Length: 355
Image (cartoon, rainbow, N blue to C red; front, side, top):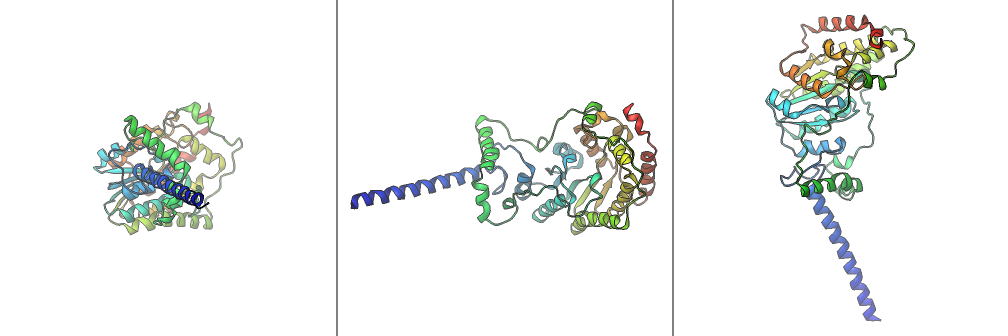
């Protein structure tokens, strides 16, 4: 009887040790291949798949070496860090968040700026369709918060997470063993989709009846725009006066302007743009760019896959324009620039788009 009890005890101890060994092995493997850079910077002997922005970006901010960030929504996904580095003389990383509101982008930038004193250049989209929104607007709510804090205890949600292993660890192991190189920031989050009239129209649901034009923003709506820009842009850039922020309004296609015209919201958009422009022009370390007068680009639907998203070629041209100072908004030129924009889009023959 005692022998059986002794054997059972030995068996139990062996099982516990085997389990602990398996857990330790899993932790070591994940530590080495660390797909979202939560524990350390990338190792030279590991090939990485850059995947899932909201899991990866905070690790990039923590552990990569860089002095510049390209950030924004899907409108920034096709930027190439190699082109930005050559044009601006920087060493950049790309951290984009598809569908993000201003607050999400601002909070990510703030974490990066707090961690990296060498961060002196930011290239940042100011999505034109997000101006008239609440300052705390956030479309994405299912965040992996265990990756964003400094609590080591909740890292168990990272180490023993089936999705992290399936989408992160195993692809990295496979790439490494097969000799595939790590993905570059040029490739990270970028997309290659068909563009042109046909594809824009497939995704464009135009209002059949044109709504009456709303005369402009109400006092409450103006305050909302003010708070949105103040909280998510102005407050942050003023905290880091030694960092230069290249901010640009995203140039949407003529179909987006048609949509605003059909909805009767164009005057509201102009009001919101003026508020944002005047706020940002008071920040000496912001270089604000406006490309809505690039009519050859905007009216040519070959440059777009839907009414908002432009092709990678336009991302390249935006970098070139900003590096050359083209489209720069100043206190001296913004009044004339906004008035010309207003007259052009209010008087455009939108029906000609569909002929």
